[in-house]
Image 1 (cartoon, rainbow, N blue to C red):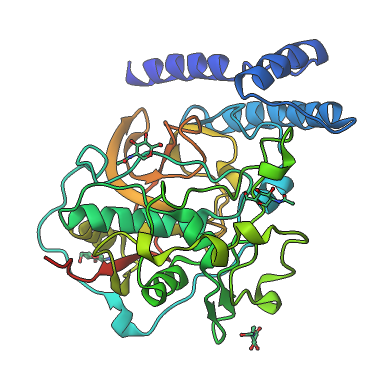
Image 2: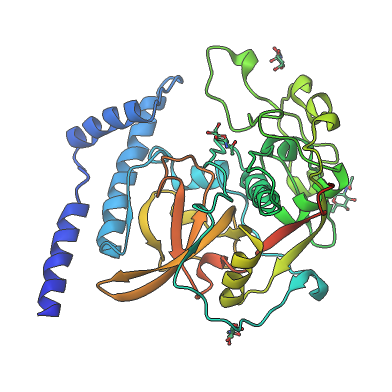
Length: 381
Ligand SMILES: *[C@@H]1O[C@H](CO)[C@@H](O)[C@H](O)[C@H]1NC(C)=O
Ligand SMILES: *[C@@H]1O[C@H](CO)[C@@H](O)[C@H](O)[C@H]1NC(C)=O
Ligand SMILES: *[C@@H]1O[C@H](CO)[C@@H](O)[C@H](O)[C@H]1NC(C)=O
Ligand SMILES: *[C@@H]1O[C@H](CO)[C@@H](O)[C@H](O)[C@H]1NC(C)=O
């Protein structure tokens, strides 16, 4: 009986999922409505045709993936459906790299004594701000860092506040020369270095005082309003690669940063890393607040929902930083599955209202290899 039900449901799931048209006319109709839904307008000559070819290839890929994973997780023609996976890698993700390790005193080590609850979530506890959109920039590392600090600030009893990601993208040129890592603005960076920048800078502005603009290339009618921030002071071209070919000095850190606007009392005294053991990570998440993490995110491009658990996902090649906010268990046809809940920075329309779930306790995609948090100075009375 059980297996019969299982088979019936599987067949149903399969037929519902393999539904994207692959023929020219069907795909084109879908492309037209998809462009409208996502406000896409291609201005360059021939771009519409080129994007349509990519879109069609992605529909085939999505159908294939949905057939392969049989409803365990699903993929969809989301906002990234007009991007070739290689283009996605270079524009949205960061260059792939190994997780750095730190001296042992940097790690919070702990043995878990109390059993963990089945599920836990910082979002309804009001420790997580709204989902943001990094746009076409490799600035995820700055979102992950700043969102961890937003949580720490709220955990300290302060009002939940959107803090400035753009300040970090514009101003943080930190480098770790022995580790061969650096913060490179829209070309990627590391939360562990960004904490050190904020310590050095002495504070952080609010999002509204220093708004995000880096990924924004939308307004082609008024190119003078486009955001063209300059490389951060200290930008190391030998570690980061060549800087942007053109930038607007009045949008640089030097022109925009105003220390008088730093959030009063918000300062970092240190930063910590968390042991790779995912039971320890869960315990520390509950104790500390939302944590900065990094993963290999290649296959997340077309993710729709479900617990992300790709067959191939190299945990040693990190290319995306995000925010760990909770965990849970899901009952499926295949048994019980535990997962992490993660906040992404690809806007609220992507995935599960801007979040995704990913398999827990197996080091999935390197999720446990770069877990870090800021430590705030005790706020002044
Ligand atoms: C992870 O930590 C838990 C709790 O301290 C412990 O029971 C478990 O053995 C650890 N797992 C590994 C693989 O070290
Ligand atoms: C953060 O910004 C978003 C988008 O502007 C806004 O909707 C939200 O209310 C803000 N959150 C807080 C806590 O101020
Ligand atoms: C540079 O940025 C400023 C402020 O956003 C803007 O007013 C100006 O027109 C920009 N200049 C150019 C050449 O784009
Ligand atoms: C940039 O990084 C290289 C290591 O790749 C280092 O030798 C050099 O000193 C750095 N430059 C600056 C200006 O810090």
